[in-house]
Length: 428
Image (cartoon, rainbow, N blue to C red; front, side, top):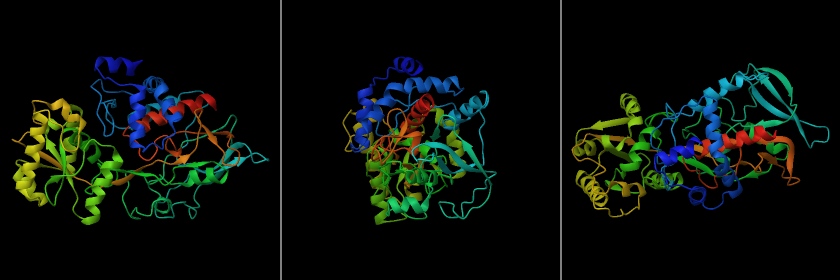
């Protein structure tokens, strides 16, 4: 299989056990392990299936995301999820009898007379989404009502609810109601709530992950997360108030977001920054760097003094931080935050003191909702009333809960969606 061949080609020493161990550490041990095992057992098939559908991946060494013990992520041609979704959608459209409906909103499930089985869905076609209305969209009356009978079953893959300002705040009141999210405006809880109403079992609903690599200088996801993918590996993050590091830049997302929140709660506008030099970035990020510089979300400085002056950072303290970081890496000494990637840098300086330096301001943004519907390893939705699968109802992806525990590791959502989407298709 391609992932196995790539691991051998790039000498990636990984295992199912290590992957699950990493996920449990980030998830604070509350993950439903049987779901992680299912992903690990079938991710190679899912990868190959996406390639069969037309997804293209870069034949480059895997990328190291925060919280992972090794570099294990293969990136697509343009480094976006759309590189997987678009060819898959085109693949489906070519299958006999398959049609994708856009601008179509699922309103409710249609149940059998005894209320035990899902037999279809009610929906509205020609629907016009209006983000100004309530999160559950009860005021939106647009669209033509339709009822679709399910011949074999319904697979719910409606995603998470990070853009649902009302529902997410009910789950986690610490979230600011107007906090920007990395998600699209349609990432609301409507379909999830309908599933609860027919008895689906909820899991981990109040665990909402913040993306620690987002920036206050752009809306939504933007380019900052991609830039910080490079900056976090070998570059550093500093508190602008004192010029000191405050976290392991390759820790899992929850650890990093929590560390950033400590600063922002004390000084709401003291956005920490991540920065590094040109050698910090991998080659696939070079084309995106120009876009980030043009938009202003990333800034370039010829010297550390210029960077310090721009962000009002004590210059002497900043230079001491960088020098200590470089010395630890060069001498093979474990740094104060036990950053794992520095073991690759013995004899080298991660941040080249000659510059230029590239920097991004940071703010955590609601990114992924850990909780959702309880499913079994066959992607069947479990009933809270009976403890057994709800007949003819399956689910996959972020609408489900339990897999990631308290916090998801980067890129594992893609494996989760592909594996359980594939399994739901097999079992429906």
